[in-house]
Length: 113
Image (cartoon, rainbow, N blue to C red; front, side, top):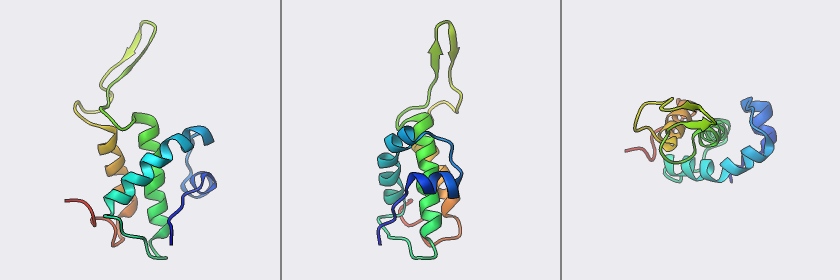
């Protein structure tokens, strides 16, 4: 069974707040990341919703922070830098957020070493 995450699931079940366009842009990276995180294991029927929520959590992280180094931004003279710990990456944030959704499933530490 393929663990598909739709925008409707993201909005209605997970409670996400991204636009459909932003969701669509972040979904491929989030899906790949969670699949890697669980070692390619397919979720059982009982684990499906937790898996889908983990993908949603990764979508939010990648949409906000990207896949690389977390840093800052500037608009004109206004600058924000290091709003996360120095050295943190979007991937690390996505991993932590996705694992929180997988707690209690057999998928939680399948691919994490």
